[in-house]
Amino acid sequence: MKVKLLPLQVFSLLDEVDRRLLCLSARAEAKSLPFLTGLSKSAVYRRLARLRSLGFDGEGVYLPFASIDHTLKLLEKPILVISREGCVYIPDNCDFRCHSCPLYGQHMRALTKALPDVCSCLWPPDIVKALQGRILERLGRGFEVEF
Image (cartoon, rainbow, N blue to C red):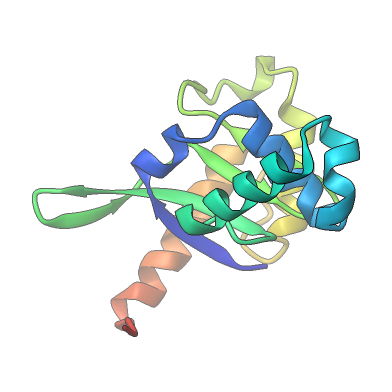
């Protein structure tokens, strides 16, 4: 599964309908989305085009980054996981007290299915930290940007 890093401010532009539309678009064709969401056909296609322009283009794990003092910093939250098996959104205001979270099972199931070889962790924050470690390791070897 692909992991995509997006600017933090992009996540603040998503609302509940956008997240639901992204999740449904991973499972169903675009022409059936108006029936599933209750939105008009043109509204669905406009929203999907806007989401694509923001960087949300299909299945994957979307993580935020921020530019702080001319350096890029990977952030732990919010996290968006989109897959055919299920979708998870861990919001910015999550305090990662997973033992008391009613969504713990859903979050763990989606994260372990999306990222099976990252680590055998018991808590979502540990999976995110392990994933960040892998990303930083790969970025440390350099990366390429095409224009």
